[in-house]
Image (cartoon, rainbow, N blue to C red; front, side):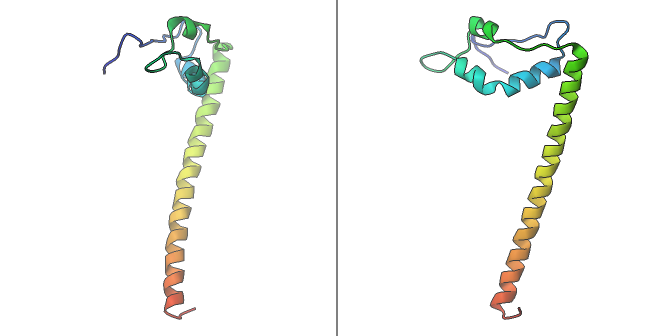
Length: 106
């Protein structure tokens, strides 16, 4: 992996669950991008990043939040998979129906 001088490392302190930090940052991408400054490309300076406030509930609450987010994410991924299967089945049905219609079998 390669990085440049603009790379920022975020290392959770004691009392911050790493996956909680991940989900907070993932949910804040647009806000963080809007904070970026630069001529050639936007960069989030150390000072700007330090000004970004992250709510930090107790660790057990962080773990509960992460568990709920990850459960909902799994359910959403499963729903997307099922939706794709339904779309594929509908496409096969439509092609079959059209073929029968053109053959005068309806």
